[in-house]
Image (cartoon, helix red, strand yellow):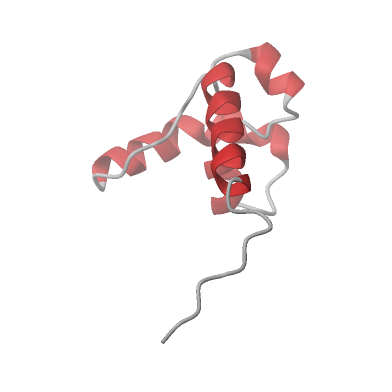
Length: 80
C-alpha cells in the first residue's frame, strides 16, 4: 500500500514500483510525491494503477512462487 508510512518504511519505498520503473533515476524518497500524478495519468489513459495492501501483495507473491515451483525439476515440453 502506498498510503501506509510504515509499509513505505518497511519496504524501503519498493511499494512504489510503478514510479520506480517510470523514473528509475529519481531518488526513492520522491516517489510518494509523484504517485498522485502517475495515478491521474493512468486514469486518463485507461490504465490500471495496481495498488495492493502489503498482505495482499505478499499473498500474491507466495501464490505465484508456489505455482511456478510446481513445475520445477520437470523437463520442458519438446516442440514439434
